[in-house]
Length: 221
Ligand SMILES: [Zn+2]
Image (spheres, rainbow, N blue to C red):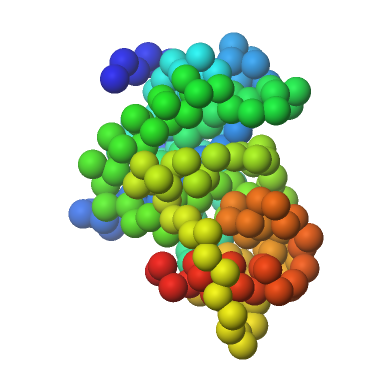
């Protein structure tokens, strides 16, 4: 796998104890073109970056070495499974995605799959921690832009997926929390869940389909 170095000064030391490895993989999209995105993520005063950028043609750029803390989650603005300093615990991948594109080019998704498998060989990242920016920032972020091929990734062993619906008496809020979502704004958390796990039902509501899919997901944890 060929990786092109395009290094960013926007990183610092991971604020984690020695021996603890990143255990979250966060997928994003950038709506700017490739050149503009690379410039944006490497311009010092922007104070943002990611470890990798993947072009629509499937070229992989490395901006920050995995051992360092890239700045892709926002500080104190994201949360997953109760953790909030997600930059310290994660690897971030940005996909270039023009807002006018209706789908993700197959070369780009193939490159993402290769890179993710490579990362999963290096770090103990559980499937439930392979997530999108929208999963960790409900109501604030909507990337990776919908519809993202989460199911195709899961079929390659990258992330969780289920097609099941299972009846249950649980509360949506409890199941969302169990999966990892911050539920301060329940409607937004439901929308983020649906963008990822129930793409044909973007209601933001605790409807029957959502409750059943939520429960089916918790069975995989
Ligand atoms: Zn993002």
